[in-house]
Image (cartoon, rainbow, N blue to C red; front, side):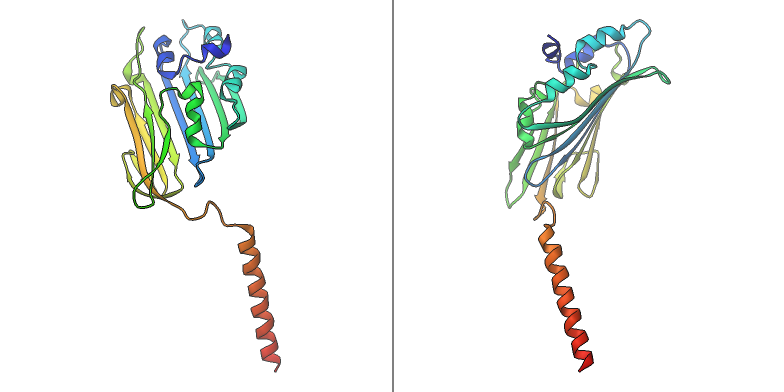
Length: 222
C-alpha cells in the first residue's frame, strides 16, 4: 500500500501541501552512463498539517523510499527521513548508484521524466530530462516552491540551457512559473576519452621512471 502511495509523483504530491517545499537533485554521470544520484526534498511543517499523514503518504517514509528506488539497476547507499525541530522542517534524503541512466525511467518516481542520454552528431552525447508541470492548491503559493537540478556530465559541455555552468557541472533552478507547462533541461557534451585512468597506466609509468633512473645512474658511474 505504501509503495502505491509513492506513485503520486512530486507534482501531484505538491497539490496536498500548504507550506514551502524545496527539491534538490544532484546527479553524477560517468562515460558509460552509470552514475550516482542524491535527492533531498524538505518542507516547512505547518501547525495544521499532520506529519503522520505525510509519513503515510510515502514520500516521507524510509521503508517506502527504499523499496521504491530498489531495482536491478540501482544500489541504494542510504535513505534518511528526519524532522528538524530547529526550523520545523521535514526532510527526505536518498542516495543511490545506477548502472544505466536511461533505466531510471522505469522507477515510478521518475515516471514521465523522460531521462535520456543519446548519441549526437560528431561524437557528442545529448543529455535531457523533462521537468513536469507543478500543480498548486489549498493555499500553496507558487513562490513557495524551489526546485534545483545539478548534473555533473562526463565530458566537455558545448551546449546547454542551464542557469549556470562550471566546467562539467550544470545547475538548473526553477520556480513553478519557470516550469509552467513543463520544461526540458538539456546539454550536449563531448565525452571524456576515459572514465578514469586505469591503474596499469600508473604502474607502467612507474616502471619507466625506474628504468630511466637506473640507466642515468649507470651512465654517471661510467
